[in-house]
Image 1 (cartoon, rainbow, N blue to C red):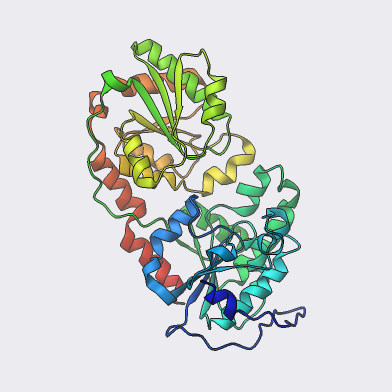
Image 2: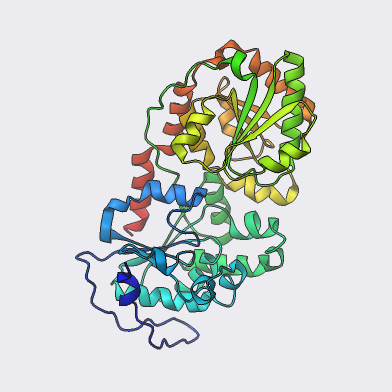
Length: 414
């Protein structure tokens, strides 16, 4: 299983002010020159970035894609997956995101070039997240190997600025980010708003690429109000805990008005235990499923009256909500249930509200406003039926597989 590890050289690498120089290329056993895909997360990670990439790149493509990551251990090495042994996990057996994003990043950039030379990679495709940002900033300084970069969340203002651990690193991360964007041969981003921001701020052109998701959506069963009461489903994380108690109190208030049980179902590794403890005695039942495969998660979400999609309201969250795009929406559409959108009006998901019976906007942090929206939704008889036709509209708008794969292929081919 160590084919990549045994074929990567670790010889000397010369650095100067302008470039990183790889070792002499070794002969590759592959018949085709691969594209080296570099991510801060492992290929089988459950997060949104990995979900998007797996939908765009088939693992059946064999030698065409070599996926490298500092989150991969030697035990997980295969012919198309490689670890970054110069990262903290490879050096110590424990992952340190701070070390990988700072002092260990130059070593990983040099190792990336050695790996690319050993496998005769035709280019590097790197996701600008975590350690990928400083590694990309180093890689674009050399001119022997083209570098394509992908942005799903702005690493400086949508991630570092919102994190206590990385807040002090925000200026450094943006400096590296700007270097990577401006030095890349091509760029893809997750939204039109992000493309416009980077054009204005950094002077770079980008294409928009979303997850590839094939329709049509299968109808969900008619919602059983008597069996489930007012049940709202939540997939994955919600950026911060603060909105969940407000949601729970809104559901409880709406359920009292309607005379039905109040339930929240949290799917994935989220805040279920904490929320259950905080909501004890409030009249809302909180259940958590733990991690589920997407197909199993969809089956749970199909049995919810509405699905909760949010962005945070704080000023420091502005870049996140105005430029990022939630991957969980692509899972929600498969469940074919109506959406409760809890976010300010200035977000990338605001246009969903134009589908009146499918997406319902709650634009304040006031629980009574959320309860009013839920009561109106409950009293709309249309919302008990499957929302698969509206979900197909969302797929056509954002997740069309041919359009997204063609957009990515067009920039990679440059």
